[in-house]
Image (cartoon, rainbow, N blue to C red; front, side, top):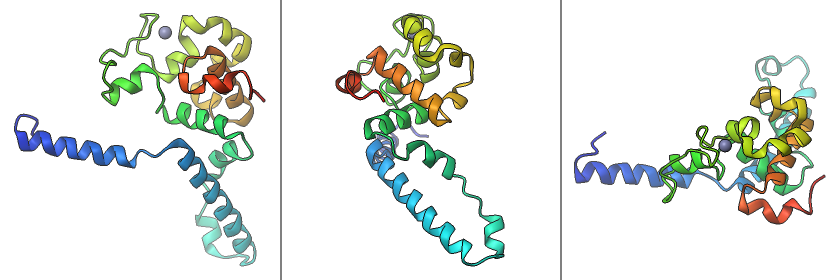
Length: 178
Ligand SMILES: [Zn+2]
């Protein structure tokens, strides 16, 4: 990378903005996930009708489990779950990574470590009460497990809402807990 020339810096900026354009709105991603889900449903029907085709053996459906997570779920909850799973979320570690002004330091308010999703969900002492109440023994499990099944991820969503840590979700905190 040529950070020390003007052209180099411009190129870096250009690449960044291109990259940012690719960062989609979570709801758009959710909608696309739904579309993909229905496409898979259609494809499965099609494959069923072509019994014994080799393609069925070589094409597992890697996204199906992930899609199940979002099926028939409140949009706001899908949005939270996508953000937790992708770690593209308004916590300090991500904001610093995106070079958001005012987030040059990603240390959590508790001063223990970076405010990552993992820290927020499983370790931060600021949310100990909510964690004990909502996650309970689940907090001992790996994050991938918690965010990977329907019932456990619901707990993570409820935990996030109960902390009111993210302003954008404060409005739904009191109304849409399922
Ligand atoms: Zn903390």
